[in-house]
Length: 505
Image (cartoon, rainbow, N blue to C red; front, side):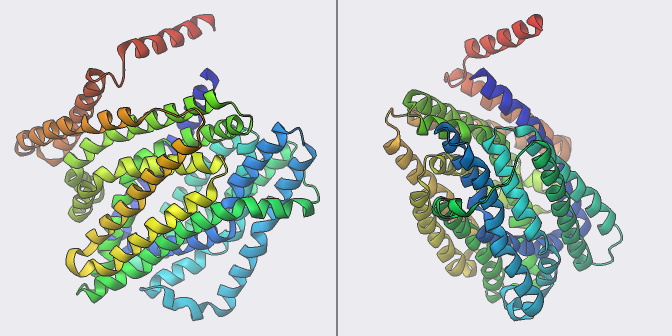
């Protein structure tokens, strides 16, 4: 278990570094091309994401899981075959998609409410081939529990995109030019990560073999995951298409619709996704462990890992909720210069716990071979989200997206946790912990609100943001200690272990 958390810490350093850089780049984009440019760029990326998901999404994790399964069954000859099948399969779909759009692209321009997004999409599209192959190679690194190359390449990909983006955007004259050149930077980063991952793949002595016998099991296992993620990407893409259209039909101008969409999806959502991003490295290392315990019938370890992962995710995410609820408007103004973005952060702050638990529980269930059921859950909740996007904009504008997210993340979390409990032979116990942890945020929110009202007129927006965010988070952590969710003895033992390890070294 110690080695597990050491690996999590190692991956987290790279992951957090990557996400911090990405977050800073998002701030740069917001100030250089504005909410309207972010909207144009976000729509293009969401449609690209849909095609990526259709071509590839379920394959990397399936390759990783089948590699783990074959190693557990001592069928090492099948490992190289499943890797080769994983590389070939997405190319069968990705290459035709690129050719179709380039030879008859104008036929599909109706998918974009703003034609400028269509042009940005076309410049990113060649990256589909490169990023599909890279994603499978990433799955191979997961299956081998070789997290160093994955972590380094992801970080370098982000750095390349940021450097190229800043260079290209700095010469832009209009919002559209900035969004277009941001798309060019994305393409360059995809080519870079593909080339580097392919080099490392062969350096690590991975080999390719005749994949014919593995296409069928790969497709059968990957199909439910791909279908679920495709439903997710399809829903996001539909939101990118329908929400601006519905806002325009509700009386917004085209520029106002893209600005509102950009503030919600391009600015607020990345902020709200910070806890989910932080647990990403934890999930990355956890999934092979869960899969191993499940296939080897180690029920105690499965129960233990599920409990710890849910509790860790809950504690980490709930620290952010009072901060974002209290300081959401200040965050929007200080970071993005957008008051509307700040209002959306505040209104959606409680959804973060469901965003994190939905992501975690879906990954765990998929590693246990329950992809089909998680797909059904997502389709139902996604359908409810789309209904809210269609019917509610005339009444609540961009906040119809909030109701949609509540259906997607809230309902999916409840159904996933029910299914997880049903399929663990030794039942994990976390419900009481979740309820206590959630209700401890309420006094923290009250403390933060009173503190903000006291300090805002004295310190101004920036200093109030830092003071309230810090003190509210600390108050919340003290509440965790007060309710026994975190214990001083546990923290003390961890420190003793660290110092003992240093002395031994």
